[in-house]
Length: 230
Image (cartoon, rainbow, N blue to C red):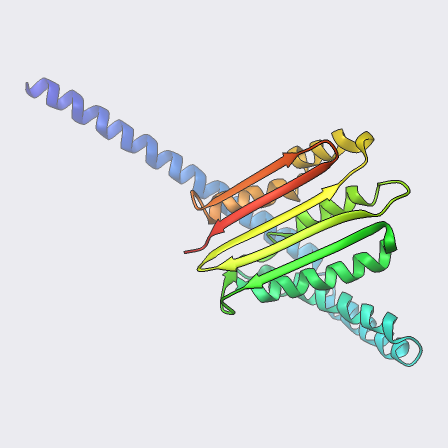
């Protein structure tokens, strides 16, 4: 009987040791990912004051000539400020992230014109709702990348952000040219810093508290992300 108890205790101890080792490895991977992200951020912060000063100068020159161009320069400056400063924080207001996306959409619309029909809907019931920065933008960037490849017709990009009682959802859909189908499917699988990075962040930040579905129809990709921040 004592032998059975000893064996049972031994197996239990081994189980907990293995589980702790797995947890430690997971924390080590997360820490390495954080260090890598900080190094990349430092590389991206090469003399940001020069960039901001230059953009402010361009804004001052443009506003007297073309207010629309001046406004786009201002939005670009806002987004650079967000990437360099807000993007390094652990959490930001969801409204701040939405403002960044709004600026991004204006700049994209200016770049690609009428080739893409942007529909952006937002509902936030709690103005103090927080979210880790830059979780959504890789999915939105990818939608634009492939929608703009449609030839000879306007492509809809639909973006919906909804937040209620600590539950945040993102829906992004885009149509694509069938001949680029495999390209976009590959993008979802091995997009490196983009989508795969977001998936890893979600696993670290919201383990068992998020769900992401990527579905493909004949000529459409759809991303559905739900995060429970409570």
